[in-house]
Image 1 (tube, rainbow, N blue to C red):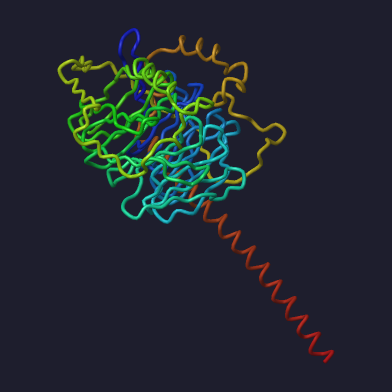
Image 2: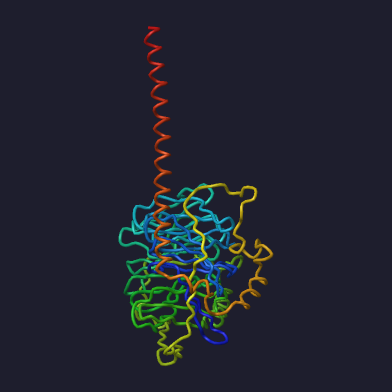
Length: 435
């Protein structure tokens, strides 16, 4: 669901996936919305009142996460089929797959420069991938638990992992060292998010709390209690002034930060007293690397806003259902990176800098304003059962097409092997005749 909070709170429900939606993310420019689902598909939506979407079919198991590159040109998806797949948003094409994990892949994220991808899996490993060579260039393993979530810090020099063993770990990928190891939760850590400054990290846990960590000082500074049950997701806003959290209590809590303004002043004064003034504090300066349990520390502030939070829930929130019938399907077929002459490029799915004139942000805004809040008559006239039946038929045809393609490849390989065998036999026969 896409929420519009101004001037009046309302929601747009985009109907397209046939199972649980596991991950959503806006593109950096905000003109696209990617969603992953347990129905084994990824959908790319244009977040307007028409809800046009493009469907990506390549994974053979539920998809767990989606992530855009910083320039919005690429999308990486992680799945329970043990693979990671990268897609080109400009051409709406599948690019390549990464296979090295031996169990379900929980999460995959681009580095800020999109040259690397970090992934975590239930095989208890975290892998770093080079997008140019398409090879695994680094591997971090854990013998106790596996990581539920992993991400790069804003500078791309470190990664943070949220573990099922209740720990949060910070790794420096340049020197392959564990910098910090926090054990501040009493339950599995499900998600984390870096502050845009890179100095703070917020974590969400099944123990029902959020924790804010000061990475420069290597300590816990805030414990936030507001959810009535496990907290599954958390994310800072682009500016870092706000962050949102969601949990099993079916609530989304929106928080406003104060540590960035007040605490940074204290940090600046403290950093002036450091022995080396030639550079700003770095995570390498932080010790120890053993777990930080922070029991009974007076510096930790515990916040429970249950009595102060305004409940925005109403009995019947206005929700507009937008059913995506006009969608295109992109499957896993490695193809050309440049289009053929006359090939149509999906202009409405491009970044604003690459968009066609008729799909520019200004034009799209004008078109959106002219469209009614309700689905069009053509959408209303098509029964949902017929749409599902057609979708099922298309899936079966897609499976048959893939099967035929695989058979053709195997036949080609068999023919090549037979030719090699015949050539070898002729050489042996000639050698025997000469001897």
